[in-house]
Image (cartoon, rainbow, N blue to C red; front, top):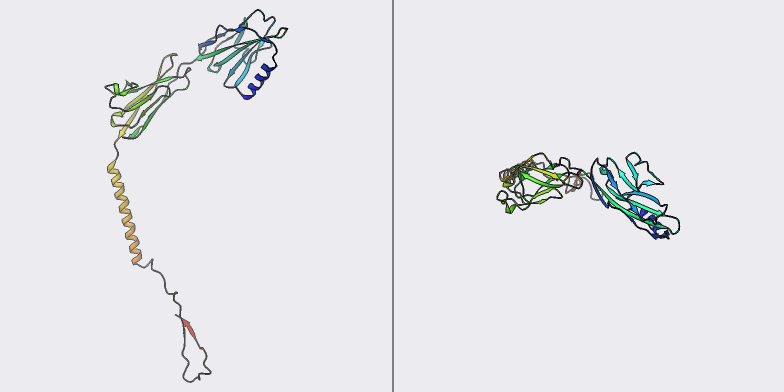
Length: 293
């Protein structure tokens, strides 16, 4: 129930100054198949004179009126009947799953209030489940197979088959599966191998059922289990080593050709002055030229 609904319920209870009357139902839990008719009963004691009767529907925090102010609401007027303070729902669907509340109020003194709660379950047979199986996996790894079916109500439980043979919950007690190491979750629909072995290779299928209608079988999927490819790993390592050797040879060749030698021509600069000629006196000596080496 949403916080808003709780708040209004608190106000209604706190403001009600009357006493509680007896409102009961002979159908607290109703289960019908999809498309059938569901009758939800409600009765009250004779001390409720000229009562006001309301029916509400509540599901996952959502609340709506079914019967209010002496008539069915627009959502129900074409597929429901009000009879003897009860409600008859016709051609029910999974959307009708939920809780129905019958409230009876006597406003005249002494005021009375009472309610009855009915849970409706619309049963739906399962649909064909979807199976998810890895097509190829390596020995020693973890493999999880899944069987998915969400239309059935109540929720389906699942069984697994390998090569058309039903897999038991405990493989160690079965001569056929004693070499396997797996766990089954019938509610979640998972089959887990941890670790997977060569013996686990085969064709897998699953079955979904909930006791309504017939069980449904999935398609068959092949799972192959392969050993670790040691030869492939060694070959890959050899290829990497060869590539590194070729790269080293290429770098050495470029170095020998001088592509990586440092140009030192501009380093170690020196200034050289020309010597004065013999015809010049020491007093008139002047720098006549210079150059860089």
